[in-house]
Image (cartoon, rainbow, N blue to C red):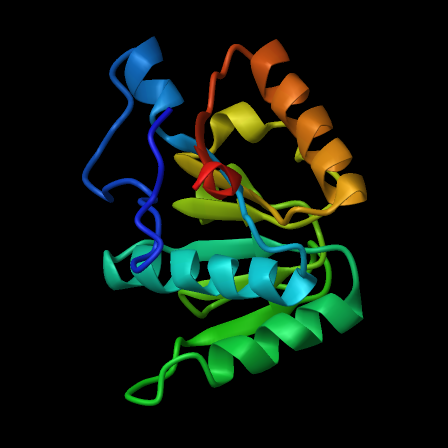
Length: 170
């Protein structure tokens, strides 16, 4: 399976890419399994994906489960690059609109609002097959990997075969 270069963020797709068939559809879904076993490594990887997709002109969101995790991601995005910052905001619930190009969501994303969706949450959105691009990121921890396997099975049930970038095989 294709793997990402450890020195650059893994591909998240091209903003110009559009759905044209089942194979193209599967190329819009990525599954990143990190060699590291820490939540901090997972957050950093997600931030790299956010930066790359945002630089390509995408509206990007990261979906997480807790206000504490959202705060960690918020701090990381504010300090991610010494040259510039990634404009973002935390979205605590579905009633709160996000006017920034990047959102840290504590609620399910709406497919029409986001070009790239990065999942760090325990729950895969029910309409995951409607997103333009979706990346799931798991660090090498047994509980997180079990959760990731569940997400993978859910995507397969939706007819999606995500591309796997398994950095543990290096």
